[in-house]
Image (cartoon, rainbow, N blue to C red; front, top):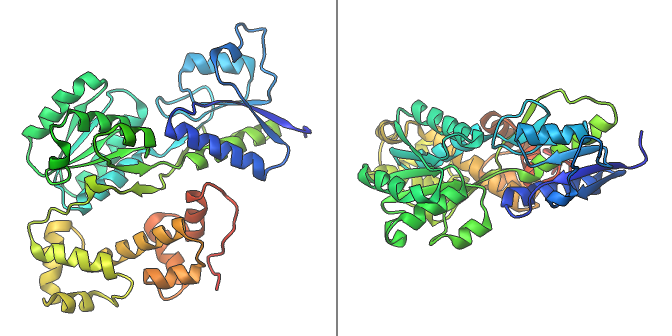
Length: 386
């Protein structure tokens, strides 16, 4: 085993995902002794010919160009890509789960009552195609059709918005990234008067620069950049120590949604459904079950179930679970409360029940979710703490 493992890094700090990946790499080095990063920041740092080699043990690159990666591999055989622009075959790749990001966007828009859905993004980039796939799959499950619009250049944004504007309203728009979301908003006349009353909009990356440049703030999917960086560094370190990477592609699920005014509206024509959603969102932890919700709204259970099924495609029980899971996510990601406190405040009788339902609904434990959101794999919290 080497005394100190040197990992070369070519990751841009100019974009939010790149910055988060760099934080993840740094966090890995802080928690694992004997690993150092060497930032390779510009073209002058790259080797010119086959003979020149990097004096590092492994490389982590925010690139998915086969030609570029092959050049890197000739200089350093152990290369890990953290770019999701294209699929990679020449080296391991650690990227966001873009299908999951698409599903998350669809769940947000459909859950708020939008039935006229649009996707706008590049024609060929892998991240765009996979986000579209997840978005489309979730829409199909809800028996909702969507329209795909190509948006490769800012010059196309006016035509894209015109196409959306010709459709039925209110419309839910999923942009492949925050950059594409900003382009759409910039092409929209008087966006403050149209969002979210006519158009709901959600992007991906939660990039502060795109938010600052946009005429209004918009909701965005939070990618797990720190987890991507952490996992890429782990693969590189293990590889240097003789453990060959098993998977060609490792996909890291998104963290959640940064909600802003662009998705605040609910568009249900049925006032009972709107009242029910408001009640559940505000009081899910204190509501004991389906019958109590129906009593609070002054209707019988069957009437409420039928109206919810018609407009949302789900029942009160699932609504309550979704609201409680969302509350638990917020507490897990933004507080240091114990699992017992999180369970109580989100409406679960005990940590064991929170863990059971959370894992069934999200695919991961509350502890794993908390660690992922906070950008570390250290087990600082126990699911059964008291």
